[in-house]
Length: 179
Image 1 (spheres, rainbow, N blue to C red):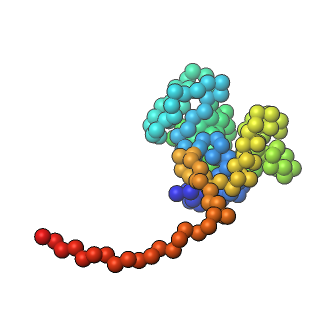
Image 2 (cartoon, one colour):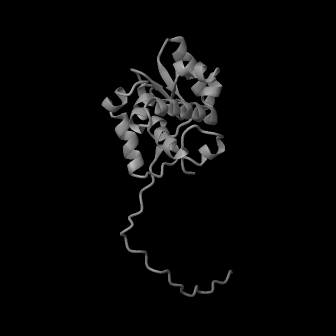
Image 3 (cartoon, rainbow, N blue to C red):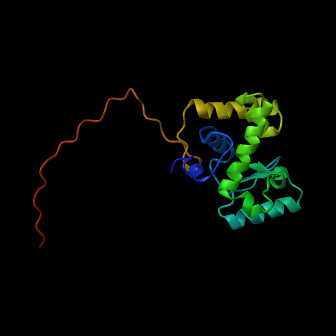
């Protein structure tokens, strides 16, 4: 399933899914249980909701700054946007809805400039996302027209200049009799 298909199940996203899917690709590789620790790293990403929730709770108790879910919502935005439990924060549509609201707010604050909006989504300001290469990554994903798939993989693009494969020829199949 292409990343974006699951977004169709999520109602009333505040930005186009065609834009949001590239942010999701950069943020988490489409992993709904992803956790990004600011200034740190987990030895591996959670593989289930239970593991993701337990890890987020542990990080919170330790006072870590981290982001969660498919669109990597920062922990300091969770309650502000109605994600009042870790389970809600990892819910696909809830996470995408909040991401879209944050990105839409950033876009409005940036007077309709997507580059500044992407930087704002990444860092809360119009500069750091540009300086750290985040904005370039999103634009690269968009410009390549990636068909982003679940799990963060990228489809190998079809070369439009490649000759078509030879037409299949049918040959009679020898009769095979069972013993």
